[in-house]
Amino acid sequence: MIYFADTSALVKRYIDEVGSGYVRSLLVAPDHIFYQSFLTPLEITSTFYRQHRTHALSAEELTLVLQAYTVHSHKEALRVIVWVIFSHFRVPAAYR
Image 1 (tube, one colour):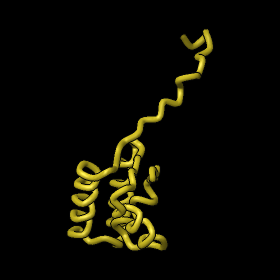
Image 2: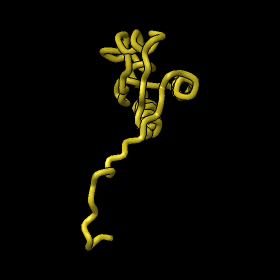
Image 3: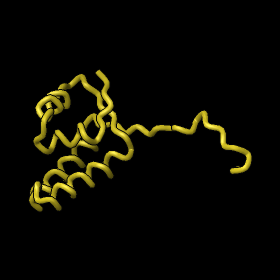
């Protein structure tokens, strides 16, 4: 099965929230392939730091979730997808 995992779904892997168990169960299935946006690393890092600023994560926990995401993102099936949103977009002559 192929999935697109947005930032809010991936955060559930590292921070206990409603739906975390379901997301974790999907991520461990060997036949599942996950895609993430090229913006996900920025968004997930921002989310983790916000959790730290609001004292939901300690400095040690912040370090651990950042390291875990980096490992998962690079060594597991979290492929990056780049959306080419302008492939059929015509730029008006005035802006060329």
